[in-house]
Image (cartoon, rainbow, N blue to C red; front, side):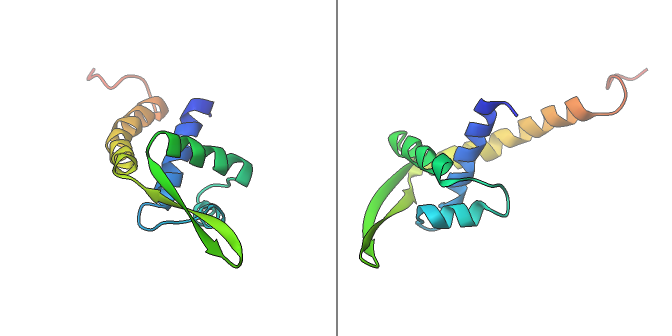
Length: 108
């Protein structure tokens, strides 16, 4: 798969994992696991990139004597998810075109 497409899809998956509640790294990995495998070394750069883009915010909370970073989706991140859902229809149409059986769609 093209790395740019995969990168964009990973960003969307991370945002989807935190769209209903704030979460932290390990839980995000666990929540995404039924759909795809993502490592910590992949996740944390994505989280930093999404934070820099304004798609999420981060807060630190003490948990068992350590600081745990919780990630919260912003309105910008929610818009990114909505835009993806809207664009997905076009992507599926392209997929159907590329994988169709036979020749053209024109009437003979």
